[in-house]
Amino acid sequence: MENTTPKVGTTPGAFISTDDANTDIARYRDEVEASQNPNCIVCYTIDAQLMRDYLNSSPDIAYLQINVGKNDPNAACMPLGPGHNFIFVGVDVNKNYILYNGQVLDNGDPCPNNCSYAGPVIIK
Image 1 (cartoon, helix red, strand yellow):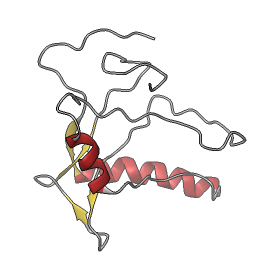
Image 2: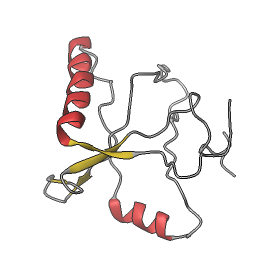
Image 3: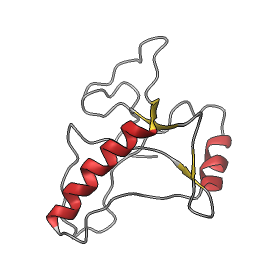
């Protein structure tokens, strides 16, 4: 796994249009629907205040790393490969999207392709 220092002036992630986000999401969900597998995950949700509390807990947090894990040791493992992405969008208590200047967050750097921002495998 390559783990080099990030290039100066670059950062993982970028805002993308809702049209681009919706295209990516629809492409994936269409495939999930076609598979007729009710166990396919289509999104993860986390309380925004928990995320704020966590990110605000230390000014040293420079990036948010999204690790793929397995909370059921018996679950089948289908690794996400190139061509998959995570799209981050805020949602209010009424299930309305909260956009940032009409955009949502995407374009994180995937590891193993680019591990320059990735922490070690084991969280200590």
